[in-house]
Amino acid sequence: MERLKPMQRNATAAAEAGDRYRSELTADDEPRYLRRQKPVEIRRKKLGGRGWTFYRRVLLFTVTGAVVTFGAYYGTRFVLYSPSMLLLKPEQIELTGNHVVTREAVLKQFVQDRNRSLLTIPLDARRSQLEQIPWIESATVQRILPNRIRIELTERTPVAFARNGNEVTLVDPHGVILDRPQDADFQFPVVTGVSEDLPREQREKRMQLYQEFMKAIELARGGSSQNVSEVDLSVPKDLRVVMSGLASPTDPQAVTVHFGASDFSGKFKMLVDNFAQWQAHTGHVQSIDLQYARQVVVNSDTSVGTVAARAK
Image (cartoon, rainbow, N blue to C red; front, side, top):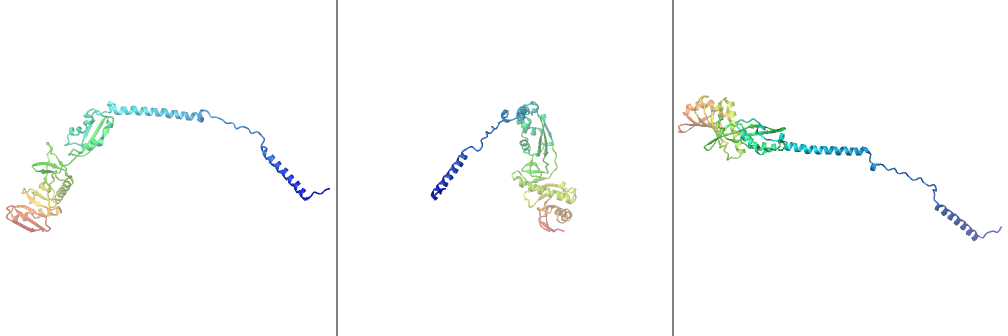
């Protein structure tokens, strides 16, 4: 056999390798899967993919919404315009708790609500208007369906007469000045120094001092507050009181007493315990000053002089 030369052998090997490479490329170009695939079946749902249950719900909600809308519309018209809901007569307003305030004064605040639905009347505004009447301390206003209003008043309680110049009015514990009712009969001391020229806060503080004094002397000796005829609150540091019944509960002699601004019970007890002795020593007493600690200044009615008596 003829031997190939080395160069020929190399050429032959290269040719064989090229044939194998071309055969691999040819094999890759052919489709790997030759079986025809089955097409995917697409099922289409009816009514855009939504079932009858959904549409029944939509219909139900629509009908319900329409019924509610119409009901609200006609219901609103009923409560706003129905004659059975309107405030037509003064008799539809019930009033309790008034003794001094007249019914006419209360009804006057509801004149603008005539022929209005009960539900459109601003009750808070009407309550505020009622409480602007001096004699009314507080008011409660309620709706009573279908067409009535109930009003309950709490009137102020006067505790003294108030002298403002030549005019005498009434005053309550909060310093509110009240007109005197024509048919009312009150038995109170007269206070000065709480005129309407003063701010409300100052009047209230002075009336608190007055009430503290009245309670203190009543505790010291029952019935003593009935003997007080006048209380001057012009100088809060010196409560000046005109009173009788110092020698005995039935003693008519009126004496002016300066009580200062504190310890009213102790000072009054000392006064009633020693008044007879002071009067025996000085004669008819005009005034007594109890402002000073452990010292009493007694002024006789003749104004001859003053006598200082040590408190026992």
